[in-house]
Image 1 (cartoon, rainbow, N blue to C red):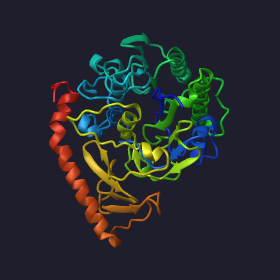
Image 2 (image 1 turned 90 degrees about the vertical axis):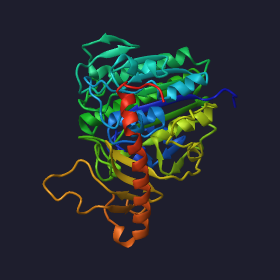
Image 3 (image 1 turned 120 degrees about the vertical axis):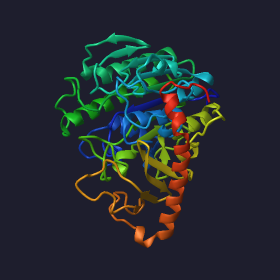
Length: 416
């Protein structure tokens, strides 16, 4: 066992569904390389994104904070002037301050102005698209410069992986952090001829099986350069599936705060530290990665702001944590989960053809009913009262901070 802190590889797919992997129950798509992480590590089956859409989910991942605190509660577009404030203390900044070399390859989606770019937020290197592949112009960046304007999207998965492999080879002798944020399977779906029409899951399946292949290439590289045993590898998604893909039977999909929109797959492997074949149903959130990785690497967190994530390193090895989780749509608090209970207080998108909300609130026991099918609020008034109070208190806290958060995201203020 080396005394060197672990290398960290974080792979985030775009719109990959909870049920799109073999290790989460899929019997159509073939994902053996990603599944191997569950076999040799841990499958956290109740992992949540902090939002059911891209930008806020990624803002939370980078900062350890609810996206509403960061002032980024909705999807950003290329013409927007808002983005991740340089005041925020990010995961790559924390790791770089701890002595890591840091790199990101893939989709950023946290602002397009120069001050929003990944290299302004703790990444030593960057190559990829600044926003989603259905937004225009589709431009490839390296560092802060546009290097391609006629991007063949079919090549993106392989190109991002090539960059990651090159970075690993160059920095195998020092602690490194690679954030590989794949564009796929966000639409428009694109895949090289090598994977076209080979999956029983159609074009979406082709794309997922291509992603699995390239995750395998990166895993093989860790073996080849001799660092696999001291590398924590994690694979997840930024939110639930959109027009295609499987939620694994969970209700809703992208844009919803039902489970299908916010629960995501999460597999992690760290030989000798995470027991093989570990399975956990402890609720965790992607914003827990910042405090967790700080604890594992000796990093420090700022004391001048709320950090919503908690250290879940014990969960990786079969332990537990307990705290409520809150689910927003933009600035509206839709739901709260604590233990097995999830209470829905609002809903987006709203259906104008019916009397919205007459069935709300809804209370579900996710241990018994993960598909959120049977409302138990009438038989559990004390649970409803408790979760409603938690939600009201937290919403009041977020609302009090809203103007400052929005001002930071718009660049009107940069200090505390």
